Length: 550
Image (cartoon, rainbow, N blue to C red; front, side, top):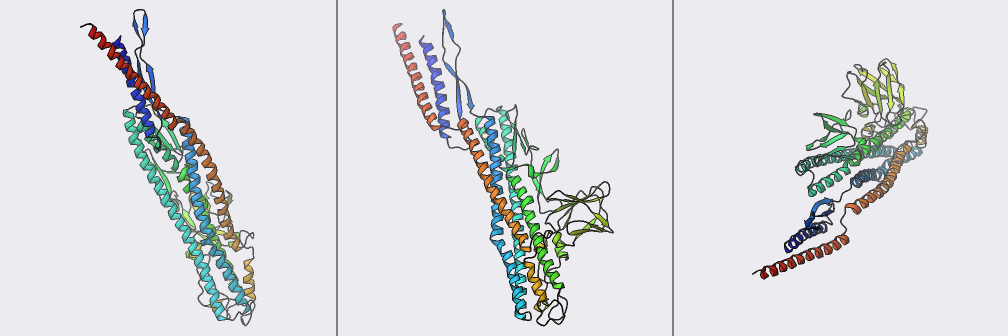
């Protein structure tokens, strides 16, 4: 009987020792990110029959488990994706909002200074000093528009760098997950430390994109991004990447490997940081650039047209103050041909009516019925263009010339009528005498009627189909960005609340509660000591019996 006592006590000591070890490990990792609490499952050994009775034989550790809930972990990943996307959007929108509010304030301010210079010259139209000063104001306006475009270009480069950095980190995680899956297959998914590391990597991955996880019987997990990109399949790690945009190379596209091929991914559907960066670039930054170009075209056209209505100090019809709206430098980037086109058409875009421009981009295509269709990227409106010789007419303030070659059915071009205008805007007039102050007579002595008409442009609704002034074009872009920034800030708050709920749920299930673990530590310590005491008692009984038999 004493030998049975010793055996039972020994099992109790070993089980208590395991309980203490797991409890100690939980306490040690209470502040370890990604650690899931572990618990010991303890069971009774099969009883033994002695005579007509059955006696217990002790206990054993039947299992050591991670306290893990798939549903709670999935909700946390979803919350992480949403909050990361919201934070990234708010961060980028805040940068752009500050750019327009601070640096951008110089653009309307310099336009006001230019109008002030016109009013001053209107008082003394023959003053050469005021004429030169007005050209200085014009140069300042053009320079401020140029600088604003440079800052927007900087935002584009920064966004592309961030997109590349995110894809690089995603690929690093993909490789690490593939290696972890390989190791987990060896243990059939029983190595809890590796499982914790795997979950931590997947949670980090969910910051960058929406993640779908598929558990495998081998203990590994397959991972998909955005519901369509297979990133990790068992131990096989795949890669995503970037390539120059099509048709605009500076607008990076996201690619994914599949079946040995590299496919372009619709990044707007992947969520997380990656989706937020692409959405910001395509839905906010590019439209802001095009609207700034619309403003630049409006400035150039309004004052160049006004010049043509008057006479300068030399008695000549007024020449352009700013770059002509259809100058080759202004036309850069207006047309982008997709690489999949089979035709050889070479197109150019001519601005016919600045007041009818919308600041949108368009998709030009040739249908199977040989109709030229123009789709507004903002509104989705499709316009069938009229063919007049080699010119396509009927668009919003512009026409498209087929300079050479032909389009094939299915060919597509992206048309951006206002592209590059903000960077190309410059003052072409070098002599203040060229300002056309006079309105009716080549004599020009004291005549300021054309300057008066020019000054009225400040309040004339000449843009967007006669709905807005020149200043309104810029201010509306600024207000739109401010509204989006505020909306993004609200989204951060709501996404953060949902994430915190999911995090609290995970912690309540899988997190380490130090109070609970401290209580367990005392309980298992007492159990260990009690089992050890039984061993001592059994030894004493055995020694007494052994002595009696001598």
